[in-house]
Image 1 (cartoon, rainbow, N blue to C red):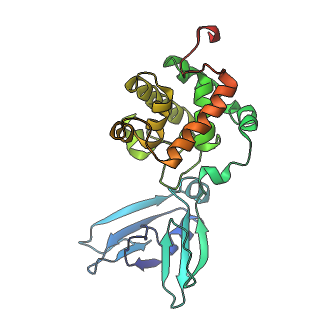
Image 2 (image 1 turned 180 degrees about the vertical axis):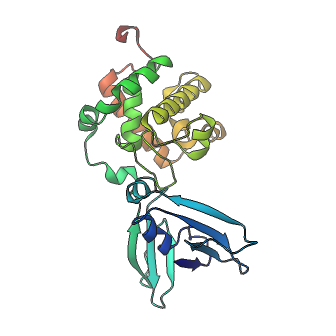
Image 3 (image 1 turned 90 degrees about the vertical axis):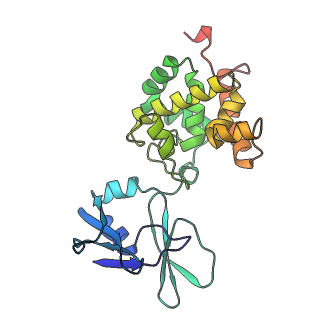
Length: 259
């Protein structure tokens, strides 16, 4: 099996042959650039003298759950195929295959209260332990997880954030998180990061949440909450749920009465 694709702005480094193979078998695949700059994916060992990268595929379950994004495969009228993580709306393209998980927001079908009741159960002990270790209110962490992933430990966002608290690769590496899909590692990393944001912004919960969503650099550049609709909506959603369950004075920190 071998597939070649010309790179473009929308193309991801996945070929149709690779994705189909990954969902049906366990094997090692190889990828490299040929002399024409074309990305090649193959299950055959590349020729001598070629710099290549090996891709390990461990089976359908792992391939499905750990895709970095939802992948769409389109075909044009001339038979050319486009592999992309963005839906295309063009009469010239026909969707022929979809791989990977949809984003967390698509998976979430429960109300906030329902999720808090049934979704946090398996993770309660981890959440409480990690939150209290950093003087954070466990209810705040549950509220963040609800908005981030709807308590789906395998959630993947459209930009590649993973797990319950939706950690990006660079943030996870900085926090020492090796497996972003592991609930204990993911929650420990997310709680640590949120605690850092609260410290950085003098316990201003709204600014800390803005930094968690858009990055501390964006908060600093805008000298406050960035004017991004997504970030502002994120703060509103977390706060609405948190205030309901923690009380109107919830500030993100552990309250004396909760000990």
